[in-house]
Length: 116
View 1: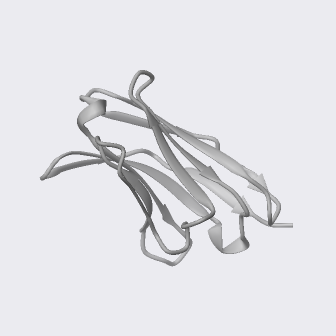
View 2: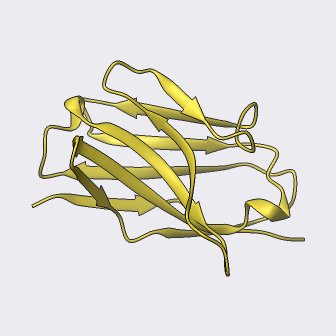
View 3: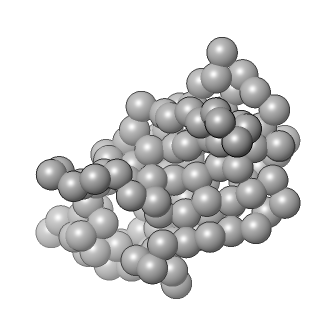
């Protein structure tokens, strides 16, 4: 059974940093494309960043230069380092695992609030 458990969400001031982590189990982690998405109130879920099994990374325009996605295939974790946070980064952040062309899985989400 695929499980994705996010952690690290918190209340942080503008300009601050936060590191989210997702612990995965129940599938071949090293072969999966792992990603982070977010959903703000009243908005659609959107891609933040993803990393392939070959460690190729892709970022949304809003994440470029501020966020870094990384994976540890020994620990089965994927992290999202977020720097220079802005109020518009406030959202529930979801871990995503694409285990095949037709199979994708989601974590339960972790709340990030950027506010003074």
